Image 1 (cartoon, one colour):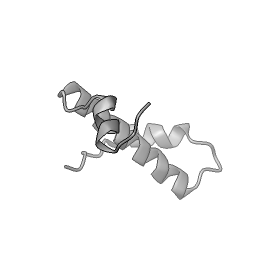
Image 2 (cartoon, one colour):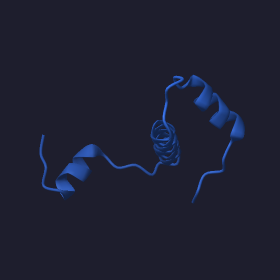
Image 3 (cartoon, helix red, strand yellow):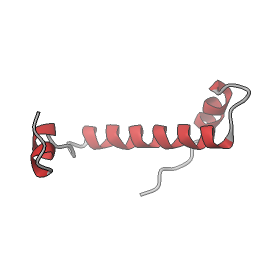
Image 4 (cartoon, helix red, strand yellow):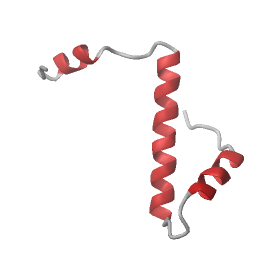
Length: 62
């Protein structure tokens, strides 16, 4: 589900960027923020898996 745009947060994000930031820089910042917020929401709703379970699924070991 797409997240609702919060204009005040978007403006603050832009204000924190350096003066020479590009559109790609902005898009990357937005993407990273969205991924982090989704991860936090999943964690808060107990929709996570143990890293050992995920590694095992792909045949990876520590």
